[in-house]
Image (cartoon, rainbow, N blue to C red):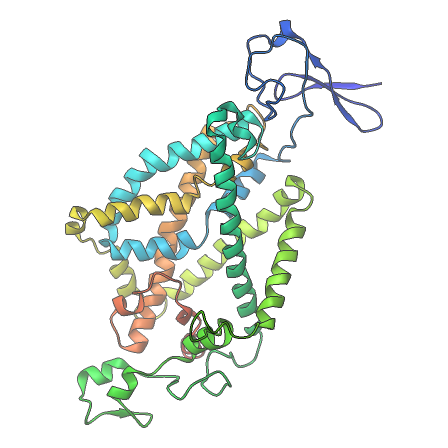
Length: 410
């Protein structure tokens, strides 16, 4: 006895008692004049059906549509939203940056985002086979696969660093909070204030037996932990140094963890993303609540939002807005096409596109308050301008300073 059901393509599929799937023959009179969006065009090659053709089994789909939403959120929302957008926002005129940013979202980000999801949903194929709809562009599928490969190789290293910091954070004394470790240098100093040097002179002010001139060359234990312990930066390419076995083990552990997250396909991945996508928001809310209560937080937030209308005349502002949209929306990589291919054929991907765009850009704007409230506190603690603290486009390790942990939480 067989239970018949209609697939997303309209083909008659059956599930036998033994649990094996089979698809019946699609009759020409039933499907004549329609494309077969199954990703396998060796037989049909996107042509019109005019003869008996056996269709492949239907592609696996998400258990719930929310699984797809969470997967896209977990994939697209990352450091590009949490740090890069706030950094570009303050760099390019504060709130004024939102004008070119929103224009690129509506005229570039959302249309391409919708195109990738809709194409994958229609063709029911990944980033390579989806281009069977236009074989001339199939090279784009292979190119995007190579790009994703390189992205994975460096993103997995970022996860390994985070895992390494997580392990070290369980110690009673944080290893990046003191200058008494083996990797620290003589120029390491735990606490210093630049504002005292501004108000005084090099000749009449000393701090911890160091003059202001010596303090200018001093380094933080946070920086030294990162460069000397984690990265173990060598003198150059001609001096590769030794293998960092601690980081190697962390890298292997992260690879194994990622494998077990994906080894059973979308059925298992769709469950895991509820944690991986939601947990960062929990952390952001906690950091925001704590950050806005710190001294100097209001100055940091105002610095983040303060508009500079003259910036709109600069071409670099518009370039940064465009690149940020493509970077944070993760478009052009083919991954959204693959995620969309697991949707039901009649899923409302148009609605999903606007929901995901709102979540993505909303996260970017919200993260700016989190980051700059803490940067305002750091600037107040170190006695420097906020621009000096936020001058790097990379996530500052100073956010984990012992001063933030010990002094401000009391």
